[in-house]
Image (cartoon, rainbow, N blue to C red; front, side, top):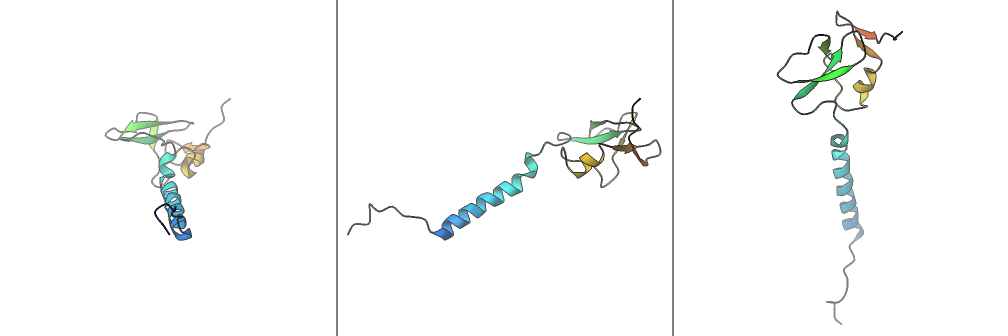
Length: 104
């Protein structure tokens, strides 16, 4: 009996481990697949008293009319928790969170 011509069928364990590895790889890379709010070397800033945001170079201060997001409430990816939160809110001139005023 010759065994050289037989195909080796992978065991269930081998298939299971391979599938688990692919799943882990996909789950750990999912965050990097989301669109970042700003590019590398930049941070997001919020328009004061109105809707809007911008990205500023890490070595610059926010331009006039913009402020840094409050600590712990900075959006990092499009449609993440804080990105969605700030769609209807902004900061007033005293740094308090307010609802975005409706335009006339």
